[in-house]
Length: 301
Length: 315
Image (cartoon, rainbow over all chains, first blue to last red; front, top):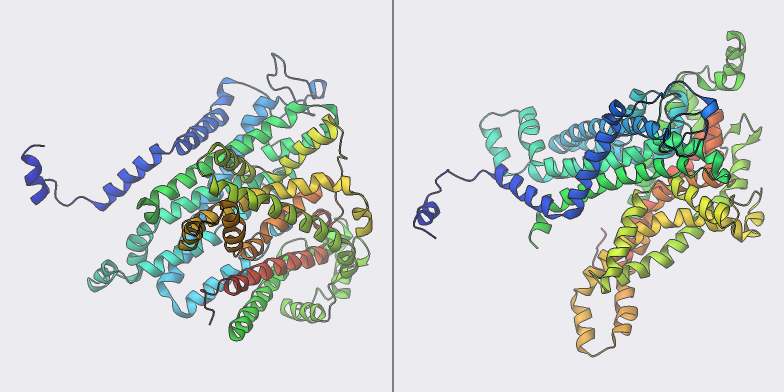
C-alpha cells in the first residue's frame, strides 16, 4: 500500500462515493457470483434470440395449414416434426415463444407500473385514501385469478393486447402492496422531509424520491411477475381461452397435442412444455438472485 | 383475542361483499350479457327484451345487485340456464368430489413435503439438499397441466399401470370406489404443493435449528433423533396451519386445471364448462365460493399464527 491511500482515506479524491454506484456494483457482484442467475439470464437471452431471430433463419409457414403433412415425426425437413394441422413444430415453437415473451413482459411491466403508482399514492397520502385503496387490493386479491381470467376471457375477444390487459388486471396487486409498505417506511425519512422543506410537492416526492428508493423491491417483484404471467398465459391458452388461430402459443400447442397422447406423438408434448418450463425457471432464477442481491438483511451474511 | 377474532371475521365478510360487487358488476356490465349467451346470436330484440324482463335484467343494476344479495343470504345461489338445475344442486353434487381431490393432495403434500424440508435443513448443502431444491424449483416453474400430461403419458400410455382419466362418476362414492383413478390427479396437484411446502419447511427448520432450545437439548446429551422429532418437528410445525391457509389460492387454481386435464367431474370442471357456455349464475357462484375459500384460508392463517405462537400477541 502506498501513501496515496492515506490521503484517500482522509479526503476521498473523487468526492463522496455515490450510493447509487455502490448499489449497482454490489448488485453486479452478487449477481455474477450466483451461477443460477447467470444461467437464468443466459436462458432468457437464448430463448429470446431463438424466438425472434430464429424465424429469420428458419423459414416456415405458420399461417396456412397443410393436412397432407399432419403429425409427421421429426425428420430432416421438420427437425421437431409437425402438429395435427401440418404446422412445423420448430417454427411454431418460435412463433409461440414470441407471444409468450410479449405477453409475459408486457403484462409484468403494465402491472408493475399500475401497482407502483397505486401503492405509492396510498402509502404517501395515507389516511382514508390509503384504507380505501388497500381494501380494494384486498378484495381483488381474494378472487381466484384463474376463475376471473376464464370468466373475462370468455367475454372479451382474445388478441395479444387483450391477453396482456386481462393478465395485468390481476398482477398489479402484489406490487401495489409491496410498494405501499416501502413508501410507508420511506416517507418519514429525513431526505423526504428535506425535499418538503425545500418546497418539493407531493408528486415530486413520490416520483423522484420514494419510487426510486423502492426500486429494488419493484424490480424483484416484476421479474417474478414475468414468470407468473407467462404461466398464466400458458394455462389460458391450454384451456382454449387464448389467442385465436393461426396465432401460436406454447399452451395452445400442448392443448392440440393432448388429443394424440395415445398415438405417441412425443414431439407435440415435450418441446412446448420444456420451453414453458425453461423460460419460467429462468425468470425465477433471476428474480431469486436479484432478491438476494438487493436484500439488505441477506447482504449482512 | 375475542375482539381481534370478531374484527378479523368482520373484515373477511367485508372483503367477500366487495368480491360479490366486483363479480356481479363484471357479469352485468360486459357486452353480450346472459340473454345473448342463452338465446343465441339470432335472437330478436323483442325476445331479448322479454328474457331480460323475465329475469329482472331490465332493472337498474343496483336493484339487481340487492335482489341477488338478498337471495344469496337466503341460500339461493341462482339457477343454471344450461344445465336446468339450481346452482345449489350442482354444488351439492360436485363440491364433495373436489374437496376429496384437494384434501387428498394436500395430505400427500404435507406428508411428503414437510419431512423433505426437515431432511434438507439437517443435511444442508449436501447432495440431498441440492437435489430436492432443484426438484422444488422445477416443481413450481412447471405448468401443472403439462405435469398432468406427462404423468398420463408415462403411467397411463407407456407403462399402462394407471388409468389416464379420473373416476367418471356423479357421486363422491364413485370416486372413493376407484382409488387407482385418483392417483394421477392427486399426484399432479400434490407435486406442485410439495415444492413450496418443502421450501417453506426447509427455511423454518433452519431457523429453529439455530435456536437456543436446540443447543440446550444437544447439551443435555439428547440423541439427535429425539431432538429432531420431539423438539424441532414440534416447533417447526407451528406455521403449518398458516402455510395451509395461504396455499389455498394455489390449490383452488390447481384444482381447476387438474380437473380439466383428467376430466374429473368436480367444481373446477364445472366452472370450466360453465365458462365455455357462459353460464353466468354458475360462474358467479363458483367465483364467490373460491373467494370465500381464499378469504377463509387467510383468516385461519392469521388466527392460527397467533394461537400457535404465544409470542405473537393479538390485540
